[in-house]
Image 1: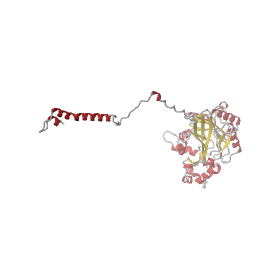
Image 2: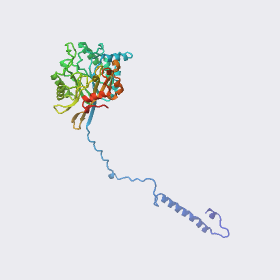
Image 3: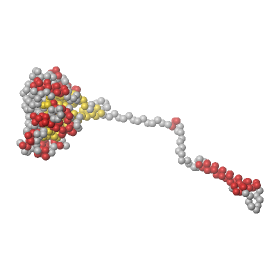
Image 4: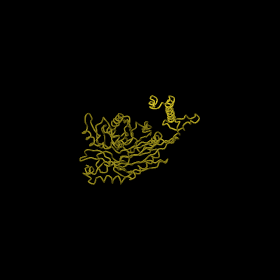
Amino acid sequence: MSNHSSRPSEGKHVPHSTASSRSRLPYWCVLVALLAALGFCFGFGGFQSDAPTTTEPEASSILPPEPEPEPEPQPVVQTVDFSATGDNLIHAKIYQQAAERAVGDAQYSFDYCYQNLVSFYSGYDVNWINQETLCTDELEPSTYPCFSTPGDCARALYRAGIRVFSLSNNHTYDKGTSGIAATLRFWASMPDDVVTTGLWRGEADYGYIPVHTVNGITIAYLSYTEHTNGIPRKDSMEANIIYTNQTDVIEQQVKKAAELADFVVVGTHWGVEDSHTVTEAQQTLAQQLADWGADVVVGTHPHVVQNAEWRTAADGRPVFVAYSLGNFLSTQSKKDQLIGTILTLRFQKTTDPDGTVTLELLDPKLHPTVTHYGPSKSEVRAYLYRDYTPELANAHGVRANYSDFNYDYIRATVEKYIDPAFLDFT
């Protein structure tokens, strides 16, 4: 278009006005086209922009969010996994070997005896044991018939996971007045989380009930013995046991324990040594303890295993009784004295939203154990049967006198005397 406006055509004169009008017409067309394009881009021609459009809602159309519904109150469930171990009976061979294994400034090292149980005990909130012999740091060690055990033995049990020690048994008075005084001082020196039961500082102390709280559940511990090998209490003794025939005292203690605690565990050192048969006296006392408020009765003393059962208390509560857990560690020489059990169960406390509390005793099991030693009762240590092997059984020192002692014999023995419903070999 610039050529048309700047240079006239050759051979013909084009009037100026005509030439001007012809040159302006395209500009208007361009302008119209531009306007149309702009209108198209901005939506005038139906073009839809990619940019989002928003529309402010009217204030009256905005609704508040629905409130979250209040959750329904749920019951609070608390549990304690509990174990109880039988007689820890420390003969000379055991503490002599512990002396040989000691290193540094230590006089004895008993950890070897219990190392196979450390993992097992770590799975429980509370581990209880019958400490059959006096433990002290003051008296010389001694063996049958009057025992005294180095305190390092109890410290090894503590490291293994034991926290509750029952001290009432037929060997409690073995060392007379000095033995009672020394063992009291020893247990006072142990860590604060140790609980002992079975020794009282005279009748004025009978109202004291050992109680501790674990996972929000309170447990009371009491222990009694049938006899003390004919050794009487002396007036000079700082503390004493309570005999199983002192039923008036036991009734008062158990009833008070039931008032103080959610669950009551009673240790009973009773029965006939080396007998798998539960006596009528054991059954009678077990029922009395249940009626008075016990929840678990843990039997020791026969040095061999006896059966277990549920009993029903006068108020309808189920009460579990293990009549004899057998030996845990010893160097006794009869083949069935080397077989024991560890009782495990669960205490459960359920508190409903309305405050109602339900207490339950769940899943009692007896786990077989073996005291193993080699020739001449060397290398004494305890095993769970599940960790024991036929090879170890065939190498057991007791086979010098009992060639039929083997892996299968151990299982057959516990199956013969204990209700299979309670046995756990896993």
